[in-house]
Length: 150
Image 1 (cartoon, rainbow, N blue to C red):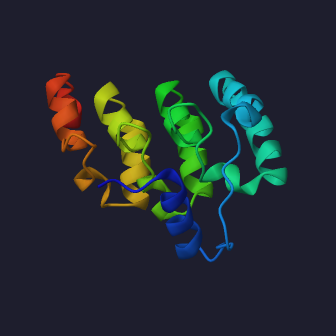
Image 2 (image 1 turned 120 degrees about the vertical axis):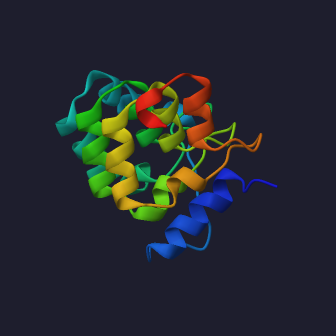
């Protein structure tokens, strides 16, 4: 059974030394400004948001339980992805959205080699992490005919 978002968040906080007794994941509406700045590709605004909300790097910020990294990959912003990967702990790259896909799986689906390489350099385990239906990111890439990802 897949870990809940709170369990994933607690595991990441534990492994990065930022554990708290109880993880509080805010309503996704709280993160709307972050979501918007990611879509706009405004790294300075993203950094500013992180200064007062450091957990925003490792929690769900959307209704589908996507992280900032998922959204940057979805937006196709390779530079934003690279910067997010730089400021995130390696374990946070393993966080999954509601259907069990990591941000790496999003990159594989889209054929975004730049984003995928940035993530796998930091966490080589990402290609092995399966979705809720048991598919690997590479299988998703193959189904989408993303030859450069396979």
